[in-house]
Length: 215
Image (cartoon, rainbow, N blue to C red; front, side, top):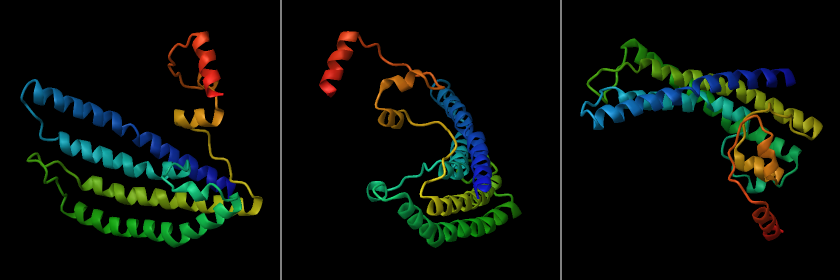
């Protein structure tokens, strides 16, 4: 189970990080559109299609990666108070009842949707440029398969937690600055991470006064 969890996490992370570059391409495309539209009065016919296809692709293909890092939104005001075994039991039931049926439906319905689009080489109706979008429909199926693979890993995590009483540790990854500060309860952690973080200069007197106020 641990070997499969490691394999699924690595697979999801690879796809998530590769498709994360979509936001760079999207930013360049939108920036170009803004320049030519407002400075040269020559708007493109493809910028809108480019932006929603790239954003949709990134959003869908990063779903399994986010799941592997437990990054999806959860109403955990009650969940976080439970013991790990209780958390695992509830998650296991929810994965079986809701997650896998939903993802299976996504793959099956998406396959029909994509196959129909490929048959007549569907193009976008949002612009006169006739931008092909049939390949975009295939993302639905690919994302669903990745979610299914990662979902099995999440079930294995629940089983391991039920057996051992602790959650298997996820791979080290980037973390939101706010979460790092809340866990470490000190600014020193920002000086030793793998990523540079610019902090405002604090005079020692000001820092002492601030520490006193916090206490």
